[in-house]
Image 1 (cartoon, rainbow, N blue to C red):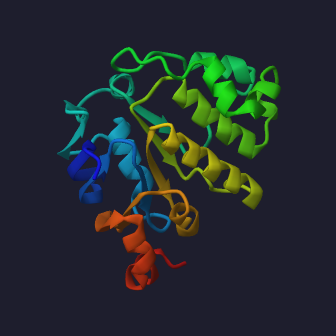
Image 2 (cartoon, one colour):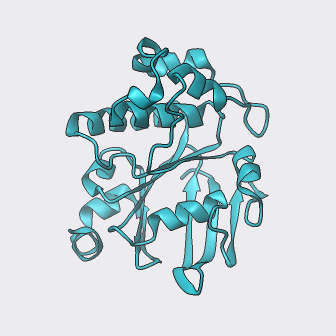
Length: 237
C-alpha cells in the first residue's frame, strides 16, 4: 500500500447558508490514481474547489506531504504542489499553445523541474505539432490536453482533474485515459473527479464515491468493480 500523500479529513463546505459537503474525508497515496466518483451535483467539483482554496472549508483539514493546506490562499496551495485542472478547460485563447505552457511554468514545491517544455512535447507530441496555434482555435479535446499539460508545467505533487472526459468524443476520451495511465507510470499522483464510472474503471487504482456531499465508499478500484450495489445505488444514471 502506498504511503498517504494527500490527506483530506472532515471537510464541511458551505455556499452561503447552504451546506454542500458534510464531513468529506479520504486519502490519496503517492503515485496512485484516485477517482472521486458521483452523479452530477454530488459534490465532486465542490470538493476540488475546497482542496484548491477556491471554496474554503468551514471545518476540516487538508494536508499534502505533511504540509497543512486549509486556510491558505489558492496561489499558495498551488505553490505547495496541488495542481488543479478545472472542468471548463480554461485556456488563454489568444495565446499560442507554447505561450499557454510557458505561462504555467514553475518549479515544484521542493524545486522539482521534471516537467519542462521538452518533456511535455515528448509525452504529448500533438501539442508540439500545434505549438504555434492559438489556443482558442483548438478542439475541445486539444484544449483539455493543453490544460493538463499547462498544469504539469507547474511541477505539481498532485494533479487534480475535474471531469476530464466530459463532453468529449469517445476517441478523445480514450486518448485522455491513455495520458492518465502514462502519467501514473511516470509516478504522477492523480486525483480525478468523474461521473463516467466506466472511464475510471480502466485508469484508476482507487475509488472514492460521493453522494449528496457525503463519502459513501472508499477502496481499491477492484472493490468498486465487484460491488454492484454501490454502483447501482450511487453511480447508475
